[in-house]
Image 1 (tube, helix red, strand yellow):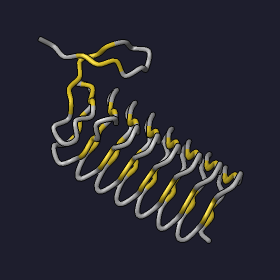
Image 2 (tube, rainbow, N blue to C red):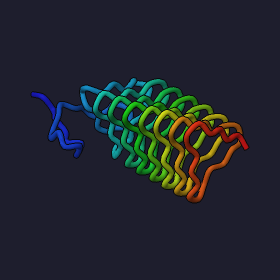
Image 3 (tube, rainbow, N blue to C red):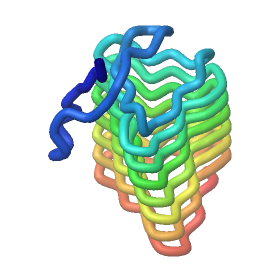
Image 4 (cartoon, rainbow, N blue to C red):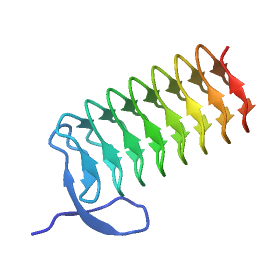
Amino acid sequence: MITTYDFDDGNGPVPAHQHPNGGGWVADTATVAETAYVGPKARVYGDARVYGDAQVYGNARVFGTARVLGDAQVSGTARVFSDAWVFDDAQVFDNARVYGDARVFDNARVYGDARVFDNTFVFGHARVFGKARVFGNARVFSDARVFGTARVYGDQELSK
């Protein structure tokens, strides 16, 4: 018997299983390492990949062709999707969204209602939060903070 689950993504019930480390639902088309954690209310679907000791928990969703690797964490009601990557010790939480070709890594944090998308990099000890938007070919790194309703975009670089 095939087990199915409806990820509420418009595709209806698809073959899926509960991850042995946390019990969250994982589509059979997605790959989650045994060492990773997918909490009971978290979901990983599409062609997403979660590797290493990465954690997806709370009501977080990782989908599309997104990657969450290393010791990265995605939690709260955060979404990581499309071709986005979150890795190293990075964290995406609260109601944040990371998508497109965005990369969040090192010890970076994206949280609140922040959005990081397009061909964007957030790394180092950078923080993006509030209702901030980082997009285009922007780079936010070092100890930079982007918050409130700030917009960093195009070929801008922000390091402090």
